[in-house]
Image (cartoon, rainbow, N blue to C red; front, side, top):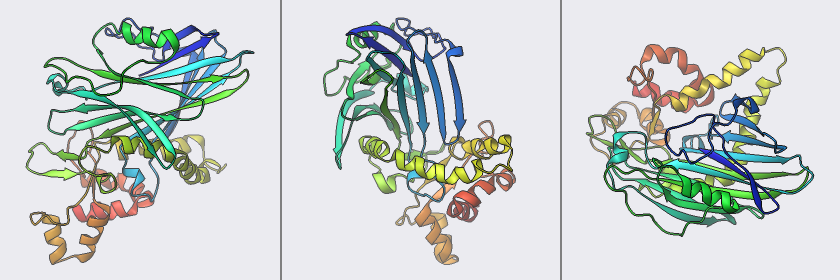
Length: 378
């Protein structure tokens, strides 16, 4: 969830949760943003939400970027999303604008209440690029994971965090903390593990001063580091594709955040180069252009699993078959991994061939090696 804080002359004049909802929790926050002052536009794998802050002469644009890039078999596997906030000040005076990003430690399942979950702050500098944020360690359930939320540190950008707060309470403390000075005040280090039945959440914030008629940019990242997974039977453990590049020990979240925030501009250039040939074709109708890209969401949101094939597992049936009969199969699977998606969220079967007959076009055209891997797997 995102919240904006606007300050003039050292005083907070506007603070609003950027959501139209009015939940039964966190009632100390200012919910219920008027939806008529915002609009949403999507062109997968990017999306834009524009907010016109009532009475403030300030426009916020949140650009969401996911690394879904044709013929890319590394960055396309990353479990990350980048949120780039552009701030436009139409006033004749300076304004200070802060964006707060809040996130609950959990997945919405019963394991959220098991206890033992904890958060910690982090700061990472690599190749001259710095990020800071909070790691949310989820320590129970079949597949352990760590969520990472981060802000890119830039000259003129003030970064702060709150390691923990109660997402089931009124939320007045963290709301007032931001309201006081547009920053969050939290010590470095880790929170205490949650007790059974208790939930926890964390927040990061970034702020900048924008001059009259000027613009500012605030950059956030969310990643989910669940490197090892098991299916329902729990008989075998698999490593996700991205672990080939970032490790499988559930310690990749800081690096994933830093990598994403320093590479998303390159991702956008590649996405634009891919899409512009279609978008600029005047012979194609608008509905076709929209459908061609926006209906690709199933590749990432279809219960998708992209895992590595271990090179040293003597029990892997596919490797046995590959060694005995098909050297090409062995090579493709080891180089590109195994890829699968659900027939539907209601029909929990992977790679059903009748459905794939229609869906395969996207893989053939954009990630042909995954289509070959999938065919071998079938």
